[in-house]
Image: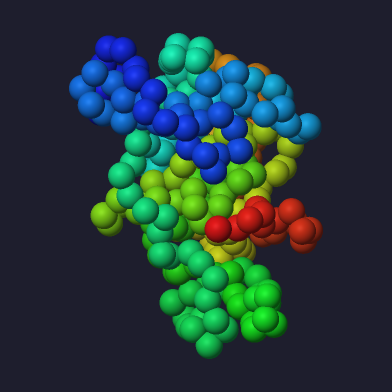
Length: 245
């Protein structure tokens, strides 16, 4: 991986993003997803102008812990001002998470919630029992990720990437995800090792977040070590992001 080369050329805007999000190309022809601070919509529960900083921090944490979950993400002064820039992943949303009929939910799936289609047919939000998703669920618990949708998990061959980490690392509990399938399951020795390393990170790894947010990362990691199991939902409608896919 290397930093973007030379001048960044806007290619187009990603229309389905809730904030100003642009596809740009560097002089080597490498594509990046660019999110300028100027394009961030204000949120009631996250400090303004920090969503891109959280994207960069998520990448730094993923790399520091040796997880490789987040594509390369940098802080840049781009065509529309300062913001985050993430290397484009030429993949597709994974088929490991989705809405499936109840009869298709075997031991290979973890059901998350039940619903009905417009015509009243039953449907289940579920994800596969997959080690790559389990590692991402652990990462989300560490980051306090408030927005793990199915579309934020991208498959690039056999590798899974997690994207869109703007709503993470808040000091208050906000975990909201479609990856609840391991709640209450004990951590493996390897997972415990990741949590122990996270609890002792030499933070801050990157600038832009409050000191209490970095302290909360270490506190969450230690709390997970102590509890020794994956966290469970809070028991409210906010446990799963909407839309979930």
